[in-house]
Length: 173
Image 1 (cartoon, helix red, strand yellow):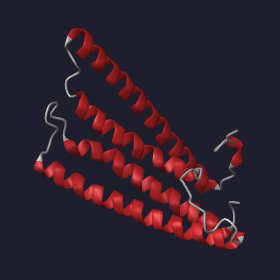
Image 2 (tube, rainbow, N blue to C red):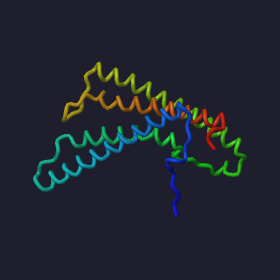
Image 3 (cartoon, rainbow, N blue to C red):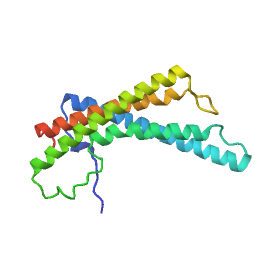
Image 4 (cartoon, helix red, strand yellow):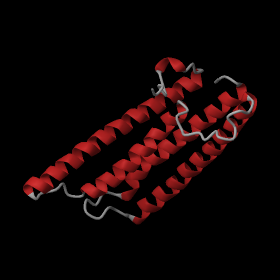
C-alpha cells in the first residue's frame, strides 16, 4: 500500500516558511487550473476536429505554452513538501547528519539553478519583447509565456533556500 507523500499536518514552518508555503500552494493551484483549462481546450478541439471538422485554432500553441507553465508553477510546491525524487541508494545507511548535509548541498544547488533559470528567462523575455516575436497562428507574444516561468523559478529558488536553511538548522526532520 502506498503511503501519503504529503498531509497538511506534516509541516510546521516559521513565518518565512508559512509565506513560501502559501505562495507555493497558490502556484500549485494555479497550475491545476491551467491543466484543467488545457484538458477542456484539448477536448473541445478534438471533438471539433472529429465531429465538425473545426478544431480550435492554435490549439497546439496553447497546449505547448500551458503545459510548460503548469509544470514550472508546480515545482515550488513540490520543493516545499520535499516531493522531488531522491535517489538514496548509496546514502540510505549513512548517519542522519551526513544525509542532512547532502540534502543541504542539493538544496543549495537547486536554488542556484532555479535563480539562474529565472535570470536567463528574464533576459530571454526582454529580448523576445524587444524583437516582437509571436506565435505563428494566434500571434500571441512569445514573451508572455515567460512571465510565469520567471516567477515560478524565483519562487523555487526561495523554497530551495528555505529547505537548505531547514537542513542547516535541523528544523526539518
